[in-house]
Image (cartoon, rainbow, N blue to C red; front, top):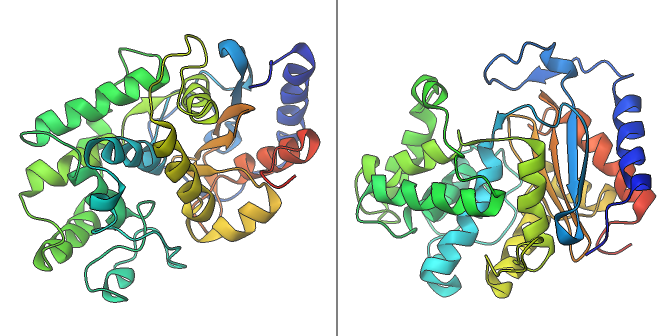
Length: 310
């Protein structure tokens, strides 16, 4: 893991200042009003060795994880049931379809989602996390996220959870249940997934989670193992191949870091054994990825040679 020095901090500030020169007139993520002009909300944080961090822009602004949470629940499910059991019910292949598509469930083996980074795959993954019921399952998810982020008060946004349109995810859930991919109630299996997507973080906390993954699963400050090394390998591989929705291939070429995005405009990006990033930029492109986040990470990856094949 690398040290985050003053030069890297200055580079972040410079990159954010340059990004703010652009107008981000794109589809907007929907989350609680920030008091800023939402399209121009840009924040980034990076964490390296020893928990050293730097940040720029609106890095303290809180936002929901949305689909970024899929990478973390994948890690927890792998720790709970193991890769063999998990991948009997979820595939490992890029889908090429939108993240919320039901069409992928009708292709290949009926009812089996193509990977854990699309909604259907994440619903199955979350359902495999251990818990007597939905409440205990979500409590374990939240506690896991809290340990990774280093914030014991991390929680979900109850207003957002209640207001969110749940119909499409319900359709995915019941389609998979009708094909015996899932067995159980909506309350016990689907609700924990819906809650996890509204857990709120800021860029600094997100960069800490990314730094744990970059540090082969160890806490960058204490050295304590939080995620098994083999789990990290699987999670980072699937983030690299499927983590940026149906833009994953282009992103792998242009940025080259295992990453996971969310429709809040969040991106978690990992430079293995070097550093971890947390980014927010709510203006989205047609793939559901942050316009500002993509540009920032492309600039930094090129400047610091962060791509895994650089």
